Length: 326
Image (cartoon, rainbow, N blue to C red; front, side, top):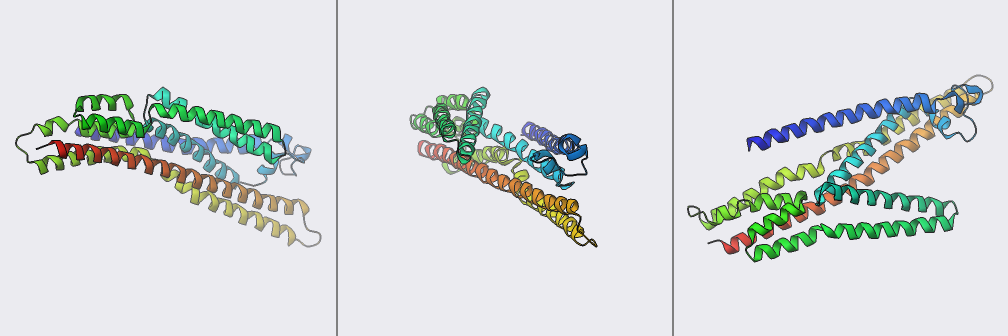
């Protein structure tokens, strides 16, 4: 147990280093992009970043959002970082070798990108391209479905139940080793004491069942935090991004009204800059918050499903143990 605790502490430390590093790197990248890419003089009339952006120059328009923009870019980069981190972790937790999990993840990303590109193509009136991309997304999704069947959690639970019913505990442990993933890890940890408790002559039946239940609870409690780790960043961004965006909106409106309040003719450039700042920050804030909410709910639903499967595996093992133990 001490070894597990020390290993868990090391994992927690590495996780904290990763989280802090991700935040600092995202902030640094956001500042560099804001100053040197968006603030490039070539994006503005007269090569002057203080002036108006060139017509249709998206980078120059975003630059006019002001100093809030790097903070919003940081939030979006952190969101993307932990989204990919969660996708990788959950794919590995589903089961199968790491290479297989990465292949599934790649297929999922390709499916999403094709569907998104097809949607925008249809939105802008390019129906042949949009239809073709959506069909391609459907084909890739079919490949994903076929790939998922190889280490499907439902199929694994059925095989496990059949082996338990036949009292083939050693074969069940081998099946867990092949399956890998969170469900198999918890099942294997529980099964590791199956024979030992079954052959124990000192404990009564109820004590043996309680010991098996305790073994399952300990294994599940070690596995569950790994599934939900770092989701707090998504929930934080969901709330924080929109607030940062609203802060930028307020600053932009202050600048716009200050331009209107000048004596004589209003400063058109300052007015336009203030309105641009307000709208850009609002768009980034709402977009980042909406994305974080969608991703948080998506991951939460997947984790709930896996937790249910873990409980199902544990209940199956404990019920079989109780039925076959005297």
